[in-house]
Image (cartoon, rainbow, N blue to C red):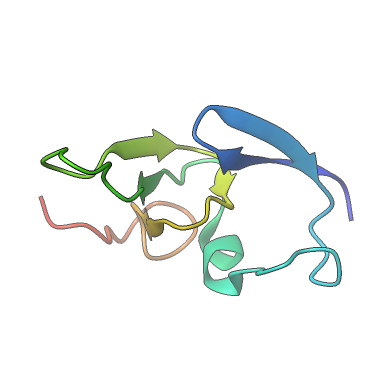
Length: 85
């Protein structure tokens, strides 16, 4: 497979060969919906004393740990939203 850009940490973009044998936790549901129109919302744990957890939006497949990751669209092509308005 061809290398793709991924988000390894907030603001840390890297190249990765998308092969399940090379990825620690592949998260196939994220790879399945990834395409040129997809946007992922990444919620990382809040720092002690901070009110809300920080959110990050990215078009790259996120590999951020620990984090909650939600794709904006349920399916490739961007026709069915995954997040409520």
